[in-house]
Length: 253
Image (cartoon, rainbow, N blue to C red; front, side, top):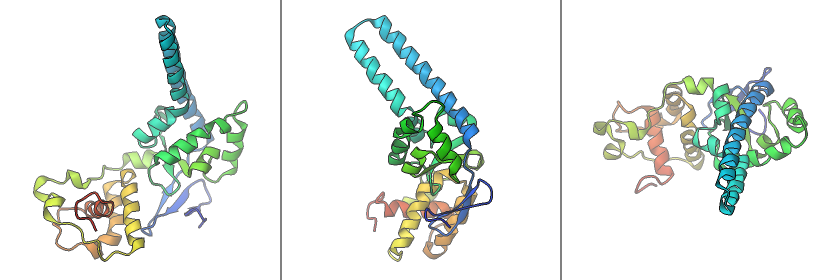
């Protein structure tokens, strides 16, 4: 296992070891498919920029030109950040090509990671044909460019995550089985490491299907679960515990 918490296989797959002691496999996206996604996104950016320039030219006022410069800056620097945070690591180009950005441990990308990886896009694409990105991705086991190394991110194939059935979160439990009105998971006996593992599970669950989430949740639920109705899944129970740990419910321990 590497220091970053994952094991590299003989192929391009990466085996990620979660804090819960569960290992699952990520499949990093290579240079050709990422190049296609980047070209699609760049075309969309150019289309936005062209529309803004045309509208600003037709308006003909000084304020419109300043607004054009601000919009050009935002689109050029924050296009990828906005889409990655709003659409689970997928810009339009990545969605079309079936790939997404995640953190190195397989959890969803966060604002800091997304911002850092995209600010360094300038360095990766500084020279003609982006030789810096080409070299760093070719030399990396996870096809990482400089921005990925700095932000602690990976670009992976999203087919496995998107084809999995959706996870039923606690808020989706029928009113007759509503968690808040029936039980509150007892988290007083958990160690610090166990609490951190449960919070990590809650961060990662949007990328899991219900069957996989229940499999991981069984590691802890067998020790936590007491009077919860059997109809409530293990993953929903563990998410309720994570909500208490995060202070999402009144009276959290």
